[in-house]
Every structure is written in structure tokens, then in C-alpha cells.
Amino acid sequence: MSILPAGEIRKTLLDDRLQTAIYGSTGRLVGKRRESIDDPVAAEFEAWRTHANAIKRHTIENLDYYLEELERNIVKRGGKVVWCKDAEEAAEFVRRLCREKGVRRIVKSKSMTTEEVELNHEVEKDNIDVVETDLGEYILQLAKEKPYHIVAPALHKTRYDVADIFTKTLGVERETVIEKQTMIARRVLREKFLTADLGITGANFLVAGSGAVVVVENEGNARLSSSAPRIQIAFAGMEKLIPRAQDLAVFLKILGRSATGQPLTVYTSFLSGPRWPGEIDGPEEFYLVLLDNGRTKVLQDPAKRQALYCIRCGACLNHCPVYRKIGGHNYPWVYSGPIGAILSPQFHGVTRDPWLPHASSLCGACGEVCPVKIEIPKILLELRRDIAEAKEREGEDRVQQLAFKAWAFVMTHPKLWSLALTGAPYTMPEAENGWIRSVPGFMKIGPLAGWLSQRDLPAPAPKSFRRLWKERQEGRQ
Image (tube, rainbow, N blue to C red; front, side):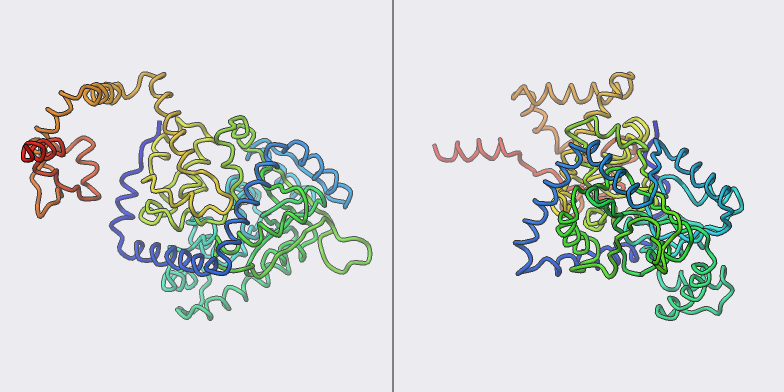
């Protein structure tokens, strides 16, 4: 079993520049979201959330029906659907297609699904040039890093970091003005679009009733990736389905507001397959890669499969006190924050990274802001139970199990509990101004030391509630 990557997390916590960048960026996104749903939108926004939840629940419960309908409509429009059970199958399909079609350059728009597949790494094995065209993703590609956030992948980079990256990798003069940095990237990427053989996009939604692949973005790079090259591939998890085009309106209203605080994102594209005779742009060939990669395993659990409702808005990350401290790279897979804490264990099994569902304060902020009302705190608790049961089956954490049994025994025997409370103040470390900030040397291991390594603990009251109550009652006599 993996354990909490304490070393890397501690390094992030001690990096003042990184802490400022994460807190500043997520804080701005939180503020913009709040402004976008203020009156008179607030009442409607809650109705939209309820409606979106109902649509997603219905779709996931009838996923087989809508997947078949989607495939029929895409084929009817001249496209092809490729079913892939795992990342290996998806990557191998792209590599094989590139060999067959003589592809030498690929332009990609932002796609978390291709991050699951590690598509860039796999395709580059065949000496194919793969270029990320979302500005944030492009910056990270040049820096040889993974995305830090679902929506804002480079939020941990300051403009000075970007200036250094561009100077080192593109050989340009150091430039710290953001607008000029954008123009530098634009000049490089426009040439890539014009010479690419294959374009790859993600998919925010898949409309079963029409076969449309819906891509939502702010930069326009997805439109260029899908229309300029002669071949296009759209990558999507099979849960991205919605039944009908009229269902899309509610999701567009909640996605922009939840992700960036916009009433509507700048570009919403409906990709409907290869271009037809007489059309002047669009790809000659269109493929939709539908990825399972663990999703059918999640579907088997009626209590936790609501995790598949996620529309990748990133609101839960922005509001999560844990994510805002440890950042995206300290999570073990491509999905970080609260949604990653419930998706990754279900995809990979709870024994792979058993610390992950515990990396939460259970404050409930993630569930309160989720635009499709995923009960994230509830699923976290269920995953914690699954982890405890798995450890018990494997004979692990016997000391912890005994400790909890002893705790339960004391709590169910009032006289023992009262005795424990009486002695508690004398067993705790010394307090300073009402707070316990550290433990003595002989207590450097254990849960108390772990707690105090990152936060303070209020000192126990000098008198327990029971004692105060008793003294009050005696005083009335």
C-alpha cells in the first residue's frame, strides 16, 4: 500500500512562492464563482444544479442505452467510434492510426482523458511531434510537468516562471508582460496548427440524441485543433454523455459559472464528424475514442457511482482547504482535489493509495459547490470504511484497531469515561497562551505529533463539563 507522500507535501507547504500562487489563483476563481451566482441568479442556480443532477443520474443509470444511441448517430454522420477498455488500448489505437496515415505532427487541445492515457508520452515513442495548444498546457509541456489543476493547469506558475520557461525553451528574450507572453505562444502555435496532420480534442459533453461532441473553451485552440488538420480524434470518458441537445443548456450555465465565474465560456463547439461534400473546413476523418479505464467498475456501486456525474469544473478544488495547501502535484493520479480523492480509489482500488480519502477535513465545501450535487463528503466516508475493511481483511493496522476498540469501550462505560476526562489535562503537553503547539521528545511519534506538525491544538479546559455541571448543581443546593 502507498502512504502519504509527506516529504513532497512538506516541501510544498514550505514554499512561500508556491503557496502564494496557489492561494491567489484559487481564491480569484472562488471569488468569480461567487459573483456569478449572486442575486438574481442565485435562486435559479440551485434549480439548475438540481436539474443537472437529475439528468446525470438518469443518464448513468441508463448508460448502455445512450452509448448505443450515440454510436449510431456518429456513424450516421460519417464518424467512427473506437471503444477502449483501458489506457493501453487507447494509446495503441492512436499510434496505429498515426502509422497508417503517415502522421508526423499532432496538435492537442486540453483533455484530462488523454492525461489518463499518458498519450503524449506514448505517441512520442514513434518520433511524432505532439503539441499542447492550450496556453497553460503548453507552458507545462515546455516545463515537462503535469497539469496542476483540472481547469487552470498552470495556476502554480507566475508570469516570471513563464518568462524563464519561454526564454529557456523557445530562445526568446525574457518577457514578463502577460499579453506579450501570450503573443509569443501564439506565434509558435499558429505554425503548428498549419502543419499538423492530426488534431486531438477532449469532450465536455457527448449528446446521444444527435451524436455531437461538445467542446467548451476560452482560447479557440480546440476549434483550430478540430478543423485545421485532416484527421480529428475526440477523447472522452464514457460518462460524458447527456441524452438530448436541450439538456445541454443547463450544463453550460453551471459549467462556466462553477469553473471560471463566467455566465458562458467564450467558445462552445459542436463537432459532428468529418466535413461533408461542399464544406470548406473540418477534418476528412473523425474518430471518437470512448474510454472505460475503470469507469464500468465505478458503475457497479450504486452508492458511489455518482462520482461519474462530474463535469470537470474544478470548483471543489478551488474551495478545498487541503488542495489549496498541498497543490495538484501531490495527488497520485491525474485528478486532484476532492474529486480526485473519490475517483482515483474507485478506478484503481482503495488499497493503492489508502491515504487519499483521508486527505480531507470533511468540511463539506466541495459538496456545497459541486454544480451537479455529487455528495463528495459522503463518498469519502464510504471509501474510508472500505479502506478500513480492506486493512482488516489483510491483517493490517492491528494496533489502530485495538486502540479504537479500547476507545469504544471507554466511551460506552460512563465511569471510565469520566475518569479519563479527569486525567486528560495532566497527560497533554504544556500549553502556551491556550494552545498546544508541540509535543515533548518522548511523544514525537503518534497521531498527536502528526497533528501538531501542521496545526495547533486548543488546550483542554481546566475543568471538564461534567465537573462544572456537578459544581453548579451543588451550588444550587
